[in-house]
Amino acid sequence: MSNTLPGTKLYPLMPLRDIVIFPHMVAPLVVGRKQSIQALEDAMEKRTEIFLVTQINAGEDEPGPEGIYRVGTLASVMQLLRLPDGTIKALVEGKRRAHIVSYVPHDKFMQVELQEFIDDASVTSQVTAYERELRKYFEQYSTINNKIAKEVVKSVQTIDDPKKLVDVICAHLPLRAEEKQKILECATLLERVEKILDILSREIELAEIEKEINARVKARMSKTQRNYYLSEKVKEIQSEMDQGDE
Image 1: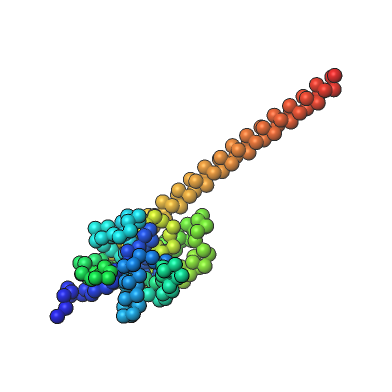
Image 2: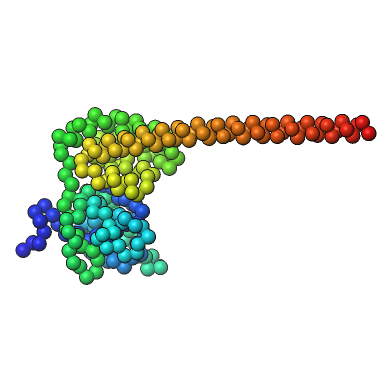
């Protein structure tokens, strides 16, 4: 008899430091903690998905349930490579968002009962109105942020699934883990879109302000350097004139 709630299933859990995995995101992870390695190996052996969730304090070596966010992403383990130092390099791909219903005892790693998020189709239709703005803001943001590759911007323009569009943009935004976690936790797709638009708008505005400040500072430095050069030139001319008088 199953001990899970309707619509739930058991999965191995692996806590992450300073990284939030989104659906449709492929990421390499270097894993050294024993429980995490065992969770990855179990998922690989049983060909099941693993629940990747960010820990609240990145410095904590062995976080318990209270030190882990409750919302994360189910992911498939694409590849495992054991390195000479005993760590494992894993390649994972995010699939679906889910939240923890309960922790289930396991002797080797943390195991959780999960319930997946389901985006309402009616809400998805509302999101289509934001898609053009989302692409425009992301492209504008990428021009002022050198951390986003041009290939990513091009690929975003071709995505026609609003859920995938949101997840891909989130995955490539160079934000703090805490801020990405808030996006991941948004209950509906519409909420996530609105939050991303707010963030992009804010970042673009801050970048423009920073650009103006840098321009003013550069102008002041140029003026200072020019004045210094003229001052030194006058001193040199004066020195030559004084020597001529002798």
